[in-house]
Image (cartoon, rainbow, N blue to C red; front, side, top):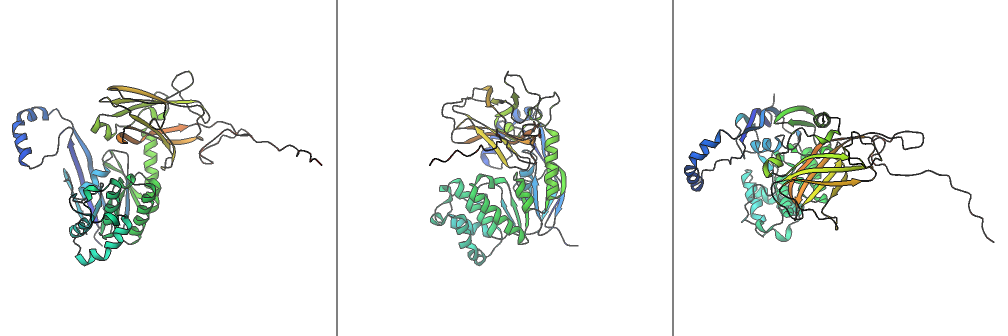
Length: 429
């Protein structure tokens, strides 16, 4: 029996909310010594959370596995443990082969070194000989499209240039195991397509890949197997298509309210972003024309989305995003307060409310996913939850014959009429 490329046994990672991870620097040691009494007194009151708990699986050499789950499910924590960036609190992880990781923009890059120097540094870290790196160098630079800046220190690169070079290095230096997080989502659309194409090439080349993504169609097409994480535990492990269906089923089941309101009004768990920054969307409600909360929403109904959110500070010219996409990730609607020239929104400390009005709701009957976000100028993301909850839309007989339009037939419904053309006008002589 062949040895797997990755083996995890009982992995767990615990964090203490509000506490930094200790660093063995002189400054940190002095500060801890000076504040030790107050730390010890308050430590017991801090909450412990398990980002991962009892996670076990094995990945065979050459297998391509997608890791999916809600924000805060433990996906990135798992990859950081496998990459040896952080240590597990319990359990053990073993990897057999050279590991390449792309967990953040510029992972493993030294900002003072040039792009050329960082390519050779990353190759050396992977255990590659100089001749091997040189044979791939031109291909890496061409893929990253940074020829003019290859001898410039990467601290002067834009985030997009950083990302292109980081992915090119990770994908072309031929690690036996490649770990890729959702970092690809920050690139432009063309680059994302390019990266996904390269990922497919890597997968077909027989290398082992762990791919964390919210791009469910990409997981279906690239991966042979999927692992669903929920609240730090393995909720499903099986074929990629089945894993996507299991994830979508869990998403629909956990988003419901119990008061008869639309199902996305209540959330199953707070987003990790909210815990980090203090910014949080607390609830979303749909109102009818009278301002009452709707119990149902049908195709063609008037709908006013009321978003209630918390801001820990005043934010001038803040932005609120509202999106709706299909269960497998196809974006249908994306509205933002920012591009609206005659609407300026500033966040006050505490609770805030903003409303988005749709005179006729355009989606066909079916289930959809609601996404919400908060931003500040410069497109700094303060809060993001792409899976805030599930929105159920009911059908309405608006077609001739009384047949309700459902999402299995089409997604968007607009007002229309059928008619027979009248007789042609007489031709003058």
